[in-house]
Length: 379
Image (tube, rainbow, N blue to C red):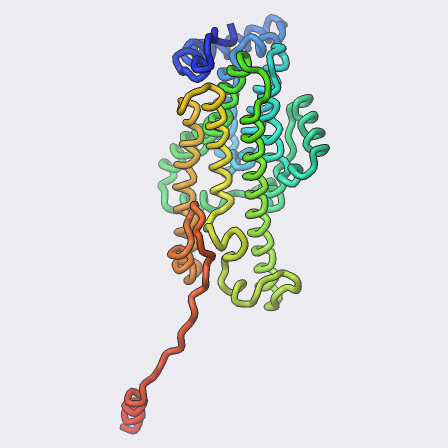
């Protein structure tokens, strides 16, 4: 049996009912896959007969092995980073595909896949329903995803590219310690985390067997997600525009025409305009909120105030807290004005007032002090 017996919506979010009974399938799955391949059986039948939560978790563990091996062979530890913006959507596509293959109600799960694809592929698609439809058809039919534009244009998919923070961490770690860190956190824990972000979809999937139709709340959740995705795109675009202008200025010693930035903005070294005037990391805020909203969506679907499905959103917040701390530590060490920026603007929660650069006050020299200097020179 691939799904639990459900008598109420509350049962859909009960860990002992929807997770524990299917954990043995996880332990048995590798031998079943090998047996099916050796016997010439149907892997598709094995897929549809396996609980979708179990098969998704198994895939994330398999990817962890691949990430670890690839990172050690290439000495490049951004293997997970390259798939960060794709895997949650792939897992949501997995839940949607499993539902369709088993002829179960799919409208609400498809709705989740709708905004998830927009998040992965291109937030501007939120302004074009036809583009969204075509992308969703592509994903549901082929289970493939395009590269994330923002990560691609930063060179994230270029051969040898790596997050600069891993290099900094390596510099402070013994090789043996970093090896363990890579084998646990970087490769496996992050891989499982990306699966956990999509786990609330499993509860919505189960709840859809009782309440299959899309309701007003589902549409409100979708609208909220699309708004957050657009917000994240705007903050990323503003950061990109600023960094592009700054690089041009450093190369030519001239403020690029039409950039919208003044000389003092580029000399500052970091962006303080747009959404960044109110929040030091607006893109981080949107990213974490997106997955928290999906968790809340699952709570609504399961008619519960909270559930175990929030583990992914919680771990993501913890990960961002550590990552943000390191990023800010590096930035504050490079740019003197950043400490003033930190005092005025919230790190993740927006401030009510925009950032105002401190005004440089000229040093006033008293006449008596000037006379003392002149007497000292005369001596």
